[in-house]
Length: 175
Image 1 (cartoon, helix red, strand yellow):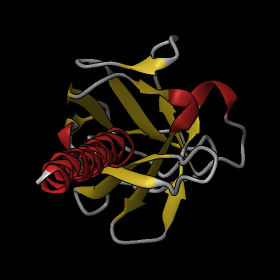
Image 2 (cartoon, rainbow, N blue to C red):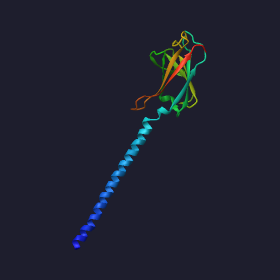
Image 3 (tube, rainbow, N blue to C red):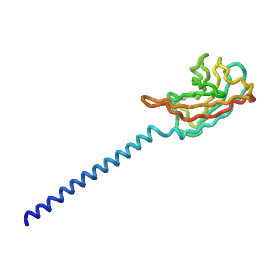
Image 4 (cartoon, rainbow, N blue to C red):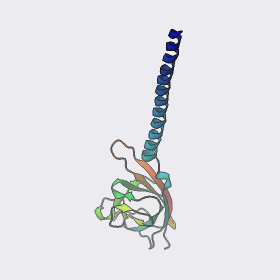
């Protein structure tokens, strides 16, 4: 009888140990899944929350370069660093061109964009996209040109570039 009491006492610590290990494994799994979802949210998402509006850049168009085409304003989203932002355009379904910042553009630039003097594009700020000084992209003979402006976040390190938004605009020759 004394032996049976010892066996019953030994079963309880074994079961307790197994339960403790099982609980630890389950908690570790839950924490891993939670941490993975946080990492995914902070690196992959968020770019779809940006919104932009467009309007025609006032002024007539000529056969010379340097004409203003469109203004694009950020209407929703967090600040975007100019250091990791690429602005490109397609005029009337032609080839895609990367625009240079107006302050650093030269005669070989196909298009330029003028921005505020700070390091970030913030909500309610707008950029003006123009032809390069020696490039005639839209002379206005057909009343204007369609301009698709693509805003891309440049990948840092091993990140890929990600398109933030494409804005379909129209450069009206009659303004």
